[in-house]
Length: 56
Image 1 (cartoon, rainbow, N blue to C red):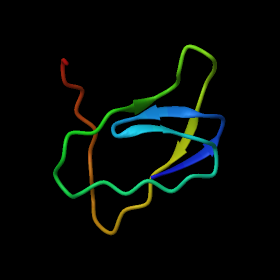
Image 2: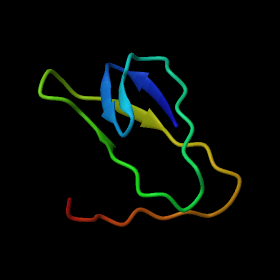
Image 3: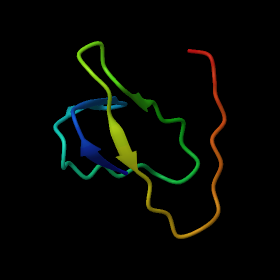
């Protein structure tokens, strides 16, 4: 997953725009905007995937 614009909050830490962040297959991941602004993400995958929302 890459943060295409603005900073984002992702599991494992906060990374600046333009960062590449790798997640293992089948893991529970968190990512999204911070209180300081929006974030646009680019998902790149080699197979079909879906998004399931979980409670933390």
